[in-house]
Image (cartoon, rainbow, N blue to C red; front, top):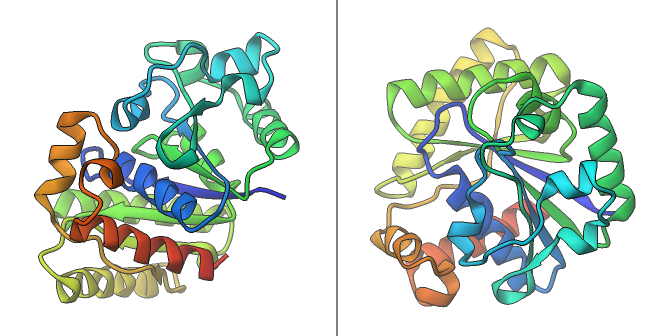
Length: 245
């Protein structure tokens, strides 16, 4: 059965979609069958990172009786994209029963090993419901006060729904591994003090200008810069993800 991996953040602009896309591509490169669900369903943009132009979206799967395989878009390396939509209020404001129905249908129809959920930033009801449905959750953050505060808010709400045993912090844009470790320790201290439970550590994503260049070129990172340190970094993180599932 497919396993769901949620990638979330409290604050926008911290590299969440970049992380979701490249962890999916890295898992695919390891021989797994992977789909990426653009779960930022009202303002979807994962297709820009992958250089594809979808004809259908998640709305067709939910409301127009399209099969999952009809909506999935082939991407670089064999990974498929399940596109969200942009400016569609029906997707952006799904009620709880619709979210539960979506999760059930995805599990029943998917033939993937892993499905990555690129969840919108913030703590909306829709975001927290989708994150809670995931088998493993990655919280992306950077070393800025607003990112730290908002990431803590996501972790706190996640703790109210289930144990944080399957939730991991993923510091992004760090100068080096030690900087990422220190940021994790800061957040873990907050979790231990106020939530009474530690948060997991998946490793550190390093700052690399190649990532920005791949986005500008609208080419996946392993296609544009297959020898970059950032791509090797994502492969290492994906191996850690798989080890913890």
